[in-house]
Length: 269
Image 1 (spheres, one colour):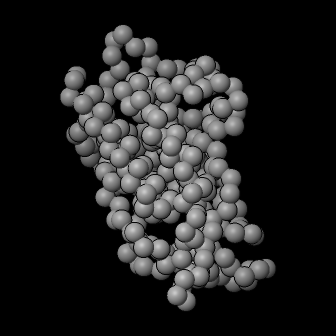
Image 2 (image 1 turned 180 degrees about the vertical axis):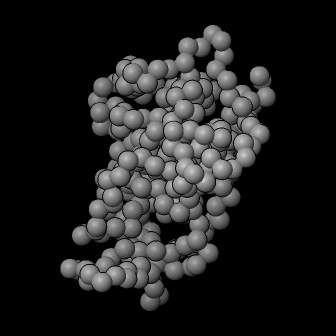
């Protein structure tokens, strides 16, 4: 696999990992098939003052910005047709990318918005000392993806991100943030992910208390963290906890490298 496009895997690594870690078993109500929309109302964003840009990104004059129509071809050229068809959601790719990054910093990151296909597999739990915890071998399902993320050539990866940046900024504005700068949001989300607490011991879970007038046809089997502090974390931080402490540290290390490269690009204007 060519290293250039792998930034797309690392920046949304947590979104792809969430496909393995979703706390849904058996019969689960489908997520709404609404259009790609931000979590915050557009009207609220427009009413806010325009903030100063903290981490500017400008494509070098020698690089040609990527056009939307060329994204599929560019990914196919670098990754191969089979990899693109099996892994990426090329349609509305910039919108999916910015929506996923933004949502990783919020309470929910709907899988329907991801720019990648969620990997298969089922989240597993086990009983330990009378409590339900994430199964010890659950983290092994993430290892291939983490190994892939660790092969990224960060310099070349950010080159690709910079070429795509005009499309990403436009998509971010169209999602309802006309006065916000996407690269600032990306770095803010990375900082939040890097601040995720570490839990070396098995994490306790509890069944989600589902309320509503219509009873479930089967016992509800969606889990949440038993610790209120962990349950209050963002979607991206919860994913880092679900992949296990070892994988979490490895993903954090790669995200820190991406952050450093992005900041350096901004200071070289």
